[in-house]
Image (cartoon, rainbow, N blue to C red):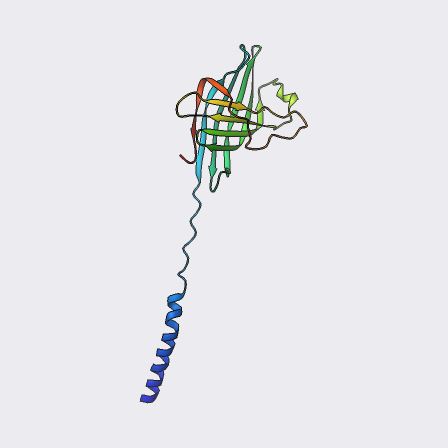
Length: 184
């Protein structure tokens, strides 16, 4: 009996000696991957731009947001912007549903699809329904802001590309904007 006990003990010792390094070398269970944290950019405000025709007034109001997860491409943009143009005693406006808001430091670009216009607006006949326009913004911490308007493509022409607008080249002469970049 003693011989069987010694034999069993020796067998257990061999199994333990072989299995111990394997158990030590086994990788630890991986922790669950971290969820990507979404960051938000926002742009709000209303301002009148410097317009070369003295008796006309162009204003751009905006309330736009965008979430980002990884990189600089917005994942979920939302909000609206409105371009108003007073001329010849009439106020024409177009309202756009935001389909892109990109930001970087003191700059932002917003594009959107036309969803409503003032009654009798020339855009109703000159542009395709739901055309896209873009606006760029330069909103420094100090000093005057600037904006740039893309205009829209004529009926039957390709749409402006999402997230694209010209340089912010027009001075703001009244009002202003508040920009919160996702990295600030």
